[in-house]
Image (tube, rainbow, N blue to C red; front, side, top):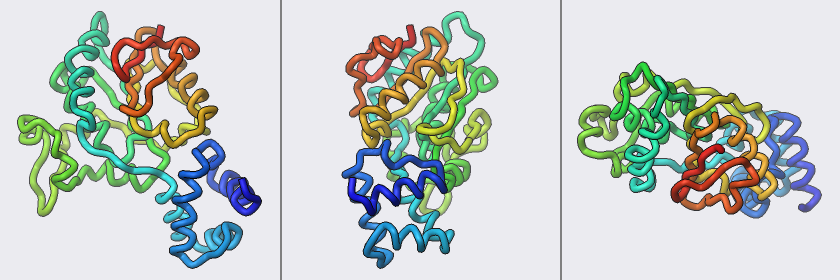
Length: 257
């Protein structure tokens, strides 16, 4: 790591609590150099000095370093497996489900979870905690307004039931919002809550270093109740789940032992 970027990483951690060294350096550095040059700064040192004087620039930096790529029912076949195979298993002998959508981005994932759960149980029998490091993404999630392309994999029945056409996009119905609680959360630094039946964290881990991934898988495992399920993204297979007290039970699904 070059000295300019190393010092920048240290300063950013002191100010924001975000540890850039836990992200894959080449990917993150490329993203931030593009933003730095777009704003007209030759070094990260100059860029940081500017951010300390300009809160709007700091917010733009935070938005750039978070990766908000999301859509409803991303990889639909995996959501079908969750709905048909694992929700019934999780409900076996339980009155309610405690669910966490980690790194929820702009809300498509927790709303997908809410739709699926409403098909299986009554609304008062589940709760979804949805967290992200990006406050702007959380605001957009709470607003619940999406362009049509985000809804391309939503089943037609659910689209009619839970979305209302509004101008060039669609609004999520208020009933779908009832069971979702949003919080700002830095997975790499903040403590995890516990006793979750289901944790969904998809297409985020690929941006972290191997050491950071190991820490997160350990924390996710501790956050699950015995028998609880961790559902990860299509590029995030856990190669040795046993070391985290997990077992592979289906492609991209891991159960706490």
